Image (cartoon, rainbow, N blue to C red; front, side, top):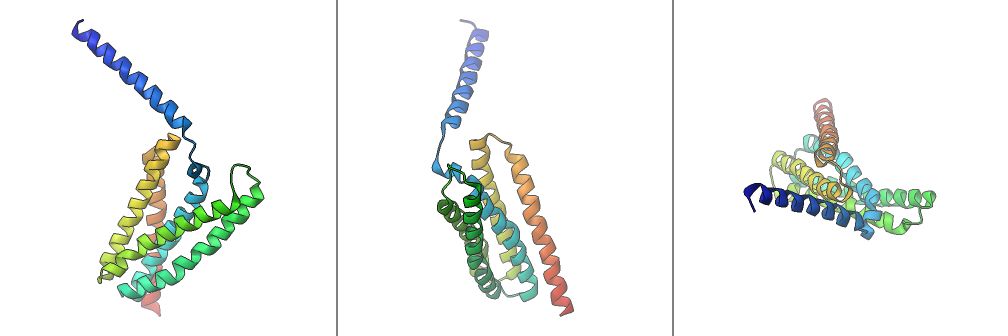
Length: 187
C-alpha cells in the first residue's frame, strides 16, 4: 500500500472515531445533566452577584479578614433563598424529569461551593487587593471548568460560553468595585 493509501485509511479512522465519540456523548444520561440548569443558576448567581459584592467590600472595608467575614455572612446564607427559589420554580414547571428538592440542593451546593472558593483568598492572603485578584482568578477558573464540561456534554462552543460568562461576572465585579470605592470616598 502506498503512502496516500495509509493517509486515506488514517483519515477514515479519525472520522469514524469522531462519529463514535459524538454518539457516546449523546448517550450520556447522568442525573446531574438533568439538573444542569440548577447548577447554572447557583454558579451564575454566586459568580455574578457575589464576585461583585466581594469587589465592593474590598474597597469599602480594605481589610482581607473583614472582607472574608462579611462575604461569608452574606454569601453562605444567600444560598438558602436561591435554593428555595429553584425549588419553587421547578415545582411550578412540573418537569417530570426533575425533582424539585434535588434541583434546590444542586443550586444551593453550587452556590455555597462558589462562595467558599471566592472567599478563600481573603482568608489565606493578608493583602486585600491580592485577595481580590485571586478571587477574580478563581471565578474565571470556575467559569472555565464548568463551561468546559458543559461544552463537551452539550457540544456547544466553549469559547462563546466562557467569554459570555466571564464578561458578565468580571463586568459586574468592576461596577461593584467602583461603587464600593465611591461609597468609601463619600462616606
